[in-house]
Image 1 (cartoon, rainbow, N blue to C red):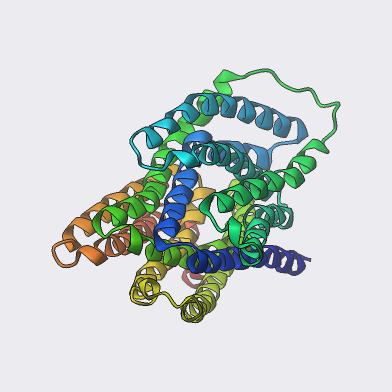
Image 2: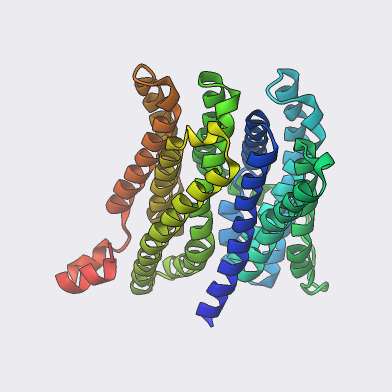
Length: 426
């Protein structure tokens, strides 16, 4: 049964990422490289905004949701929703600053605001379904949010030349995100109506924020690195080549996204429950399975991305992409290092070592900045890509060292050396 669920989840995720891959292909054909670059800036900005709107509160809420009964789960949902109303009211007006200072063009303001709201709702519902142990339904919502609309938009670009604009892409993105909310919301609404809806519990929310905010700091550093890189590359190299950089980052991003669907989303519920119950043999077994899936998946996906990208660029036949193909190797290396770091990330998260995760992401941002500055005298062109690789390597190294030091299974080693090594599974 577990194998069938994993296959179904992978099919939804693969379809979504295949459509996203196709969208990049179509945009590179029909839009100027500068417009592809603007699309990358908008996408990075919207994704970064989600962390200010959500405050990483799911770190606390999903743990409580996972181990609670039905009444506790409804309480968690109600308090989380109330918090998000406040964060949206406070944060959304600040988006106008991006357009006031001409960071983004004014014509895209309505899309950025609407997408930030809907993407946040969709993302939180996705996380909720993962915590509920429903990865297939979560992947179906993922397909609606990231797979259906790129297919429709790409088809429209081929069939109707007059709609080949960036605004059209943003419109289809908006519709797809709205549709992705329906299925998860219906699942939540199936809960018994007889359950009492709790009132506002500011004490519980403050306790959750106390737990989540250190992790939020780390997340903002991580996602900040993955947002600033595009703006910094635009500043140092220029908007035309930014389009190529955005394209290759999007293609390389297929690797961690697929691993999320086929590996991480299945491992996390087991790691959470086994760590909560202190079932360390089960915990170690799941880590071993996670490591195997991560290694095999990374190799297959990396080869697929390199082959697919080369064929795609031949069909696009635009010099700016072919001449800058080397950027893909940096993007792929950065994404692989990030994917490998998730092995230790999930283990630390399950053991509630949030501060260590935050530290690793702060370290990564600092390393990104230092790496970019250090490489700039050698090559302005490769400074940001090198900084990305160096930053993600620092994240991997920090998480590895943190887990080695705080591995909760260490007492097992006092039993039998050979048996302990098998149980630890490192």
